[in-house]
Length: 401
Image (cartoon, rainbow, N blue to C red; front, side, top):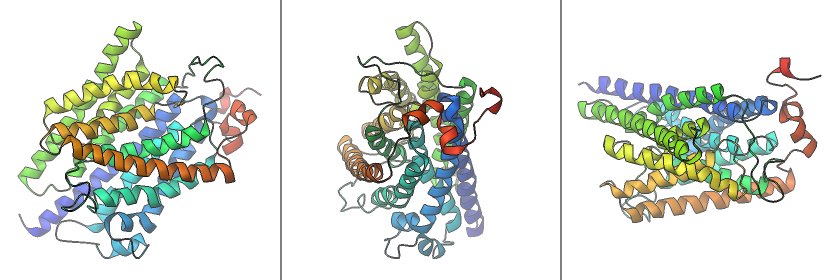
């Protein structure tokens, strides 16, 4: 194979995989719109398209440089422009693929804080996450500052980002929701949990399938090369394993809810699929059997984690903390049972990144709370954020005059 052909194939992998990961933004939008109430749907959609835009802008201006260079220029395009091409692929294609990951981390937050947070404090936090928090911890790991021979995270392995992407979004979301509080009426004075049904199960299911499809690019593209028979076989393995974890996670959630509640809970099954996907993301290059086991345990964790957060009065409308934080941690630790790493190395990575992201996120959320306020008024929450934040309802035909 010629160098030019190799260059073309590798560049195409980044571009095509990045497009698939970008499509996950639509999946998050539909999932969150389906699992929240109609009166807040326009705001949910606005937050998702805005966070995607902001994440891409900030990663271009500063984040990419911090994550993959030394950050000294404080201008990400300086590093990007100096790496427009190399021996293996286009630098632009690498940036395009990587920027989709920071947008995914930001998307985790929007569902967790849904139906009661103001628009602009949320968007300002996305600026901080995508421009500072995400790229710094990414520099430690994929940038190899702390995972090198002398680094404190030597041996830490996270193939496509169970921790580096998903649990980072989960830790940031947890910090925000602790300061934000629960939706009005979610918990009674006696501590009872009052279910707040979402607006559309078809939308939530569509969102899950879109995310599922996008994940093949998320994990498959993380092989980072397809210019050899070995690489293309590895990509095929990653794609098959990604699917294996998803199907086992979803089916496990279906069986478990049937046993526990005598009925299958569709929302749990949807999150079971996502739990399997997040869990396997740290090591989709292992065997199908490994992926199935990781997915099964992810599906079990979801069924217990969602009600556990409710018992703790941590209101998460879409179950994002259970999916991305809990299963992100599980998937990362599970790599320690393979030859790719050790339990100690994986635990160190989870703890260091978790403490860093949660602490910094809590600090910035707190500053936003005391300066701008995080929460809409009680009246605005009752009426729906679409009116107060957007002035545009999602389904005007159904709005009562």
